[in-house]
Length: 124
Image (cartoon, rainbow, N blue to C red; front, side):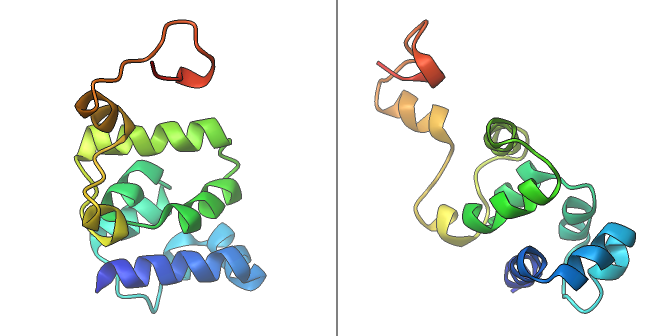
């Protein structure tokens, strides 16, 4: 049930300017009232995009959180990949239900490799 509260917090943070101001002033205080694990609190306070993704936070919600922290799109995607490499496959949520292990692992299973010199890491 904790993933629900992590995502609920992020959903509300993405939309509520008063909560954004509170989070900017005191991140721990902004998390009060949400039933979060210590690991989730740590990831939300740092912020650790890779850990949040590993824990199962939906990417559509997470991308707004990354933008709030000024994290550029390519860096956001890399932090998710790094989270999978560091923490392992997605633990809960929709990504876990579909067996998401990361794009590199999926491509390797399909026998695809990155094409040298291809734009944006396209695969051959």
